Length: 368
Image 1 (spheres, rainbow, N blue to C red):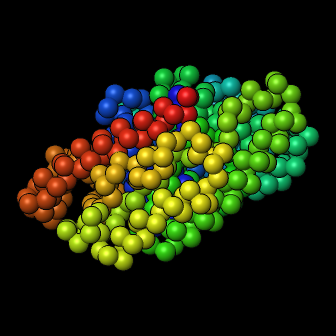
Image 2 (cartoon, rainbow, N blue to C red):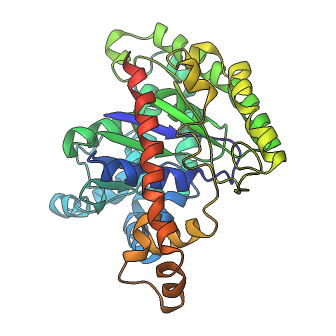
């Protein structure tokens, strides 16, 4: 199983839309994929599930989020087992670690979106777990078992789900933040990619991210050097591994520039590779070839804006290419989606496959 995350501290770059479609693309290529929504804003969950489904999952967990051990003790053992026979959110799964109690030994099933694609939904209360990471961080340097379990638990959950359900990939969606929750996620996944817009903010975002990535890598390597071999088994072998960038969701101006971008956007887009090389340290990207560093993942395959397609995706909880053939399209949408736009919707599948194949080539470098 490979654990991959998408990360950018600049919001509005299409990170969740890309995570959603990448996961669907991988699953349709025959891989078994788990999505984990680690963003307290829960956008990946909103893209995947109807509001009523989310509400049902959250309501059944509310008492456990207020106090997991006390809620569990109110239930008979058989009732607790039944309670965990349904999907649960990431924060629910993390709650015993947050409270410092023993683990339940029960792994609730993910939400099955398709036979090859599962979801661990997010929850707005994830800030509580982030606060606990910050509180226990210094204990990690002393090798405190609970502190180490706290910072490695998301990775541990991904590994457990892979073992039980046979996942080949786990895709973790993160918030646009440089806080400590993302610090432990990005440092302990196998690799991460950065979606960008071709603008000034993305260039400065990469500069900003680069400084943090170097710092995080050094901190985790220091921790790794201080703890025992037994505790090291909870960590990956390498920390903070960059898989590349992609220019995503940029407005297309056909023929205007070599990348079919407006001149101002093109001027920024071509500066991204040199910004990556200048500000993302070699130790974080040493496994990537020069070609991989110079070019966005998938080239121009997912570079250009899908206009209103992401909104339709969120409305119908399906990837773009599946939308025209859905049976539940609303009357007002049918003419547009199944009319002139059908070909455009369906063509996105090939584009995302191209993107996914390039990403897979980069993932393979992690093991070289």
